[in-house]
Image 1: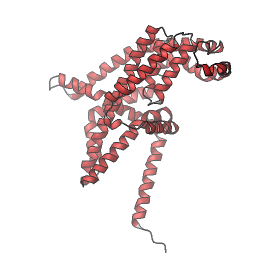
Image 2: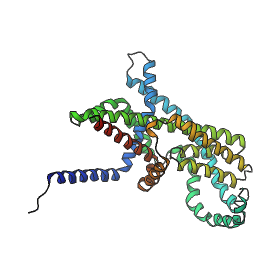
Image 3: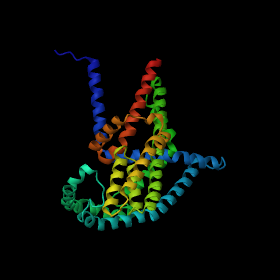
Image 4: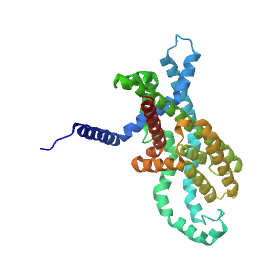
Length: 345
């Protein structure tokens, strides 16, 4: 008879359970994304709630402070969507109606090219014109309806409702949740688990606040500079660049390309000045502002970031690209904490 080693059987059972958990997460990926977004929002609002709570007398509960923060947040979001969202929607609709003709009429005529690329200008221009049919079918309907999507939230009503509600519970009972998780483990492991959760809390808080600040800085600076430069659709382009800041490495580069191409196709003549601004701002963002805002725990090698973003896109699309960096950083912190635990033991 075949003898079954108990340790091998235990290892196989562990691998099976781990694979089962991953499969379940994949099947409920949308729900997981909602919970993670709510967790990110909770980390973003946590310092504001603490500040408001300390500003009131001790008789005012944390729940009341949380309610005040949520009312203020709704007011700010409503005002922002009304003014900024409507402006972006109008510019998106205008661009969608004018872009096809601009591309057909010598798309590269206003775009400076290196001398060695000048002979290929006509071929590239013809290639762009040949792709206009796909652009009109797939991209322009999305672009022309961007204003309505921003104002009405079509397709994301459930997210708009669930994410703030879940975030409210995370802020209200976060310590209770953490204690319940720690209690699931034996006493020897509880200290380690608690330290890991604290590390993850600090990591997520630092990461999401840094991303929001980077995005806001991008929107404000791009809106101001593009408006001064006279670039068409400045608010729309600044909004696109700000949103793409949430996707590491690839997002900012894509935003720069979109801004230059839209400006060129719209007849803007100072392309080199625009490229110079975008390059200087990228250097400032990557080497000054970003390192100042991001914690040491988020530092990952650029090659690893690119791998994570590419892999995340294949697994879960845009959400996978967004979550790839914090996931890798979290795994790194967990491994470091476990290694320290075993090294100290």
